[in-house]
Length: 161
Image 1 (spheres, rainbow, N blue to C red):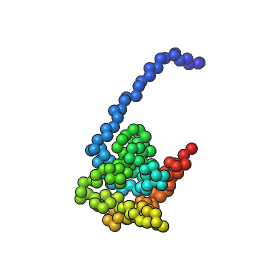
Image 2 (spheres, helix red, strand yellow):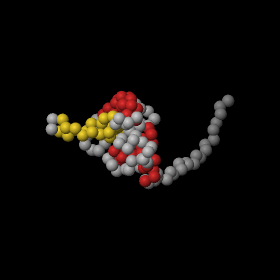
Image 3 (cartoon, one colour):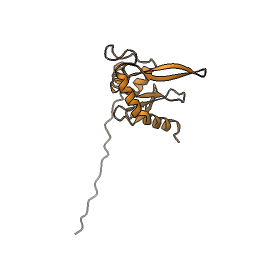
Image 4 (tube, rainbow, N blue to C red):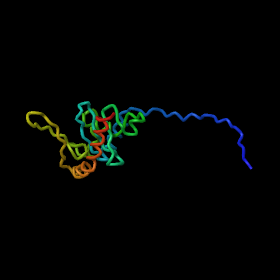
């Protein structure tokens, strides 16, 4: 016995439209607080285009390339203007105020590290060094685990076909 199927009409259903995420000061503060709470490792990329490699909040072996305007993280690719990676970059560049006082170290904003300007062979060089606050130990551990993620993000950004 052979079963036969009658042709049916399938109506296309459109996916519900999501309202674009808002670009508000409150969302930037919340995103920066998430970045600080996650103690994200980061490093400025050498290309001179304002790009930074920033570790994932969920997977220390994953890194994203973030600028003040873009990020390669899932939220950034989906069009959310306020991801924690961009918030961290904006805070590092002085474009966002630090989180509320008392919650984190005022020197490093809870990241455990600071940028130190040095001169090598007459050329100014920026070094990222441990801050000395309690978050510094966690930062050093995170940096050791995130080194491969940063190199992968750098290679993907500058060596993409």
